[in-house]
Image (cartoon, rainbow, N blue to C red; front, top):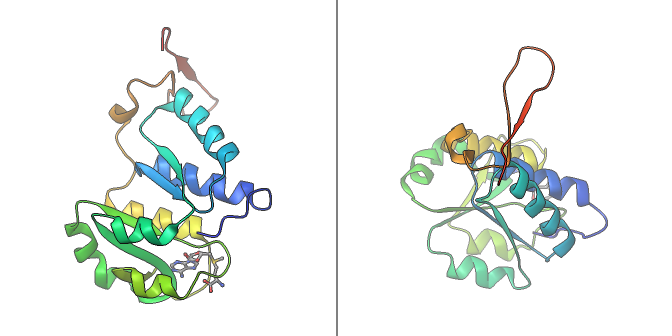
Length: 165
Ligand code: SAM
């Protein structure tokens, strides 16, 4: 929420990349930023599909119509460890993070307001920690149809490129 197109492209790009790499399926981006969405779609074409960015004008309607648990991440919320069992029970979870200051209504509209520690840090860190607790890094098999993949090595870089993809 509160992405400033042209002002914080790197931070929001990192948020999308971290969410994608840690297993998220979709990012609702408010307000929309088609250039950013296109850059992340290009990452998907190379490194594996299965993550999309949906631009959002009306963030309240996304939250109200969401079928799963809406979890707003904020340093003022309940400790993550205390509410993690409830979050884990929900098959679908929408994590909401802000850029600068978030609208006060968000605290009321969310099912849970949850803190990843009670110190100020970053939306990227908050999402990464929660996704890690919810299942962690997806297995490589989820990216098996990707055009390219890394061959893990102790030193140096090795990438395999798959033809026809
Ligand atoms: N001053 C802002 C405020 O009052 O919301 C903080 C902005 S912070 C740089 C950006 C986002 O990171 C927040 O909206 C929140 O989603 C997330 N965040 C930062 N620290 C957090 C924490 N300790 N726990 C959970 N989320 C946090």
